[in-house]
Length: 324
Image (spheres, rainbow, N blue to C red):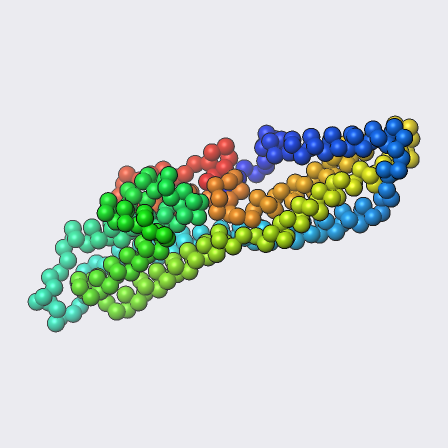
């Protein structure tokens, strides 16, 4: 996610120089042919203006849909951050002592402080692993980053098991549910009310994960994206043809003003179309996507600090004004 208020000029130039160069070459050839006597190239301006209006409405509609996908993805990850804090509070405040069950006193000894601390750590670290595993699945980075960003929060055996599952985040939440059952049935550390509350939090996490997968696995409708590109190209091709006589009527050599003005207008349309294209999938590793790495690190810092740890990792800092 680009966090600077204004785009740097080098970014604008890096994305603009190719289409601008092509447009300049095309418009220059059209003007040269017209100036050389091929006046039949000129077409009336009115249909070109009408086409431009239609294209503007169309790409505006497409860009609204693309931005909705990005904003929904950001809202989902905001929900993940909030649900993560809820999960941590529930684990720390619910799993504190043996449930008040007198009939179990003789067969289930009360949990020691060391045992509770270790259980808290396992439950919260597994959740941090879930956040990172979900991010890697969405970015298709499991193979190259699992060992550094997920494995440290799991036991070696559990990490290897989860790594080779088709959907590791789902299995991590399944393991959390199994741990809750053990805490309630075998250890007596959760009563029925607390168990239901924690399972509802897991259900919320499943819903949020499913929302991410829905956006990731459902491409933006190609009919909207493809025809948007086609219509912008068609408009850019016809634009100089419609401007030739308009500028030529202003005086000798004024027809060459078609080159800069047609290039500028076509570049604006191309840029608008490109902005919509880059927002279609908010879960890549691009400058305009949801900053999942930074959000995962924020969750990690919050949960580890709740555990009482003092040696915390630093917040993710932007790289060239981009927060990943």
